[in-house]
Amino acid sequence: MLSLAVARTPAQMHGQGHGMSAGPVEEQFDRSTAGLPAAVAQREHVLQDGAVFELTAAPVSRRLAGRTVRMLAYNGTLPGPLLRVRQGSTLTVRFRNQLELDSSVHWHGVRVDNASDGVPGLTQDPVRPGELFTYRLRFPDAGLFWYHPHHREDMTQGAGIVRRNPGGTGRRAGHS
Image (tube, rainbow, N blue to C red):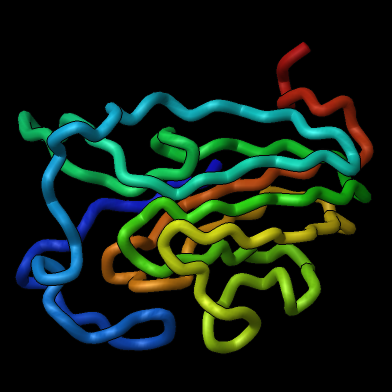
């Protein structure tokens, strides 16, 4: 699964550390929900070896605590898509940035080549609004891993998950 989180409050408006730039959130993040599609429930994708997966980061709207808020999501889902692949598989992810911010995808815990590690300024240039970046991933290990953006983490910290079954059937444990 892959998702981007809500904007921070004005009290949390300055970010520090890697992937973050200073500046008030309200100056750099559009909070309008007019015309945005509503977020939908997470979807699971069972992907075969060699698959190509299209991943788009874009704003959505969602009702939270009686308010409609602007959120950032992958493929319109919150949380974002759950990608299920078999151990030993390779996957190409075509990432399209439809946000008003630079972005990237960091594959946390996945042993990837530096070119696909998704850390702007360290292993790749940021993916600018409207641009496309292709990640090539291989999954040598079994496990549950996550992916998230590595830009303006004060506004875009996400929780994405990739589960790799160790040569299994692609089914969830306990399910037939």
